[in-house]
Image (cartoon, rainbow, N blue to C red; front, side, top):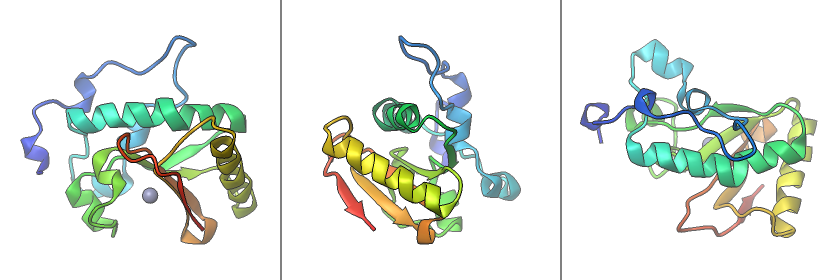
Length: 156
Ligand SMILES: [Zn+2]
């Protein structure tokens, strides 16, 4: 799908938030990309990806952020095909669907703590995910939530 195929853009969507109040994460945080900006790529998501990003936040990112109790940055969330190719993402990357986020929470040591926290939350039945991946030698943590495939696969 090309960006020109999109009929609805993210900026037309309402902001997120649940009964408790605002989400910890925003649509712009989950779609902005320095690479896309530099290369002039329109990385605003189609409706389907917008909704899947929302599910990702509700089911994983907000509960994880709440349990972690400190800032978590998303270094990459949704990626359109052009952007995914530019950053060398896998052809079937969950980032293309709006189902994945790369998390940054400080040092490698902190990433290890966060990685273990996410595993413990899954083992305690608090969350389910598709994949949890220790990436870039611990420079970031990749997590995905594909609603039809919650296999809870951990890749270290
Ligand atoms: Zn990733």
